[in-house]
Image (spheres, rainbow, N blue to C red):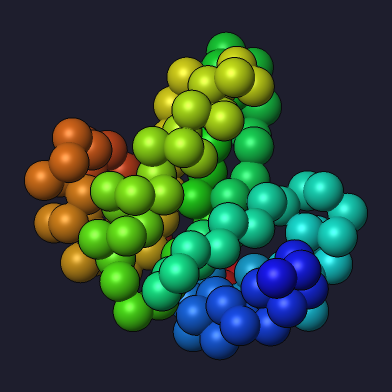
Length: 123
């Protein structure tokens, strides 16, 4: 399969996650940023995720921007180790991500800490 066909297959999963980004991106924005190399697309068999490398003044982090699909176990246990290894090779020392509250419960089981709570107010 080509990346384009993989994207078309997985696109609905990523699009379904975008409402939890509170209007920061449309699916077209995500597609453009993947094409530009700003975001990375990771397709699985029954799930997919989109990541971003963020360089802070004191560290580099892999940000899981959007994820979705029919098999979160595949995402967390099969795909994540290779995605994290790739990020480590780039010098990342942290994985971060936001989303629905339910993610905190799921991720705590595999070693993630709930470190921040984000509030949003339109101005």
